[in-house]
Length: 260
Ligand code: GLP
Image (tube, rainbow, N blue to C red; front, top):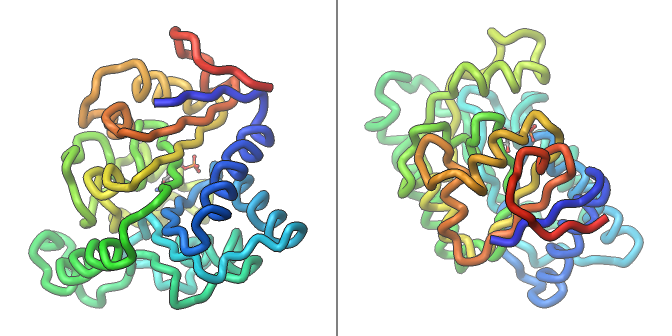
């Protein structure tokens, strides 16, 4: 696990973008795992800048997003499909057929029977198979929830889990309520890659900024590997990099590589 502490958010994003750009220049058909949330926005802006100013080519890139809210249609302004379009895809030359985002609408699914609903199960298997057919994810971008979640793998998620439906915790719903008119509008369920799915990526790159993430970051890096802090599983990954700003790194006790 390589932990890099940068002075500010903008520096973190530049370092993260350089890593992604380096991988993409070496492999034009890179399979890129993408995350949503506020954290990766600056990284996406950097990637857009590389595309505009240096002609960075995304035409052969294949993307897989981590997660999507259940019950929001793709065109909903808070769906992750809309987020990806406005924050990245509309501004680079990616081929629409190479974009994969979990489906959030399943018609009249009985929410108490997600585990066994055939349409949901079939979709989850299909998503996992698509990742395999693409050759596996080369580099997976991750943020972290204030409770240590990665994607929507909430505390208690199986460390070997695959793509499936998860119930969102109250903390996650409160954290994400800032994007909705009220907390009542925040979906209660999401479809998410599992921790096992994420662990199969050849490389993972987790970004975190701000003091609000400091405790989750400390538990992920210095705490025991535990399902109660899903990001702690990255300690078991063979190639993980964590890029932090000083706020997010403020509760770490060990010394890590510091730039900036
Ligand atoms: C969201 C997403 C995660 C994200 C996290 C942190 O709910 N499902 O993929 O990493 O919460 O979000 P933010 O970057 O806005 O703090």
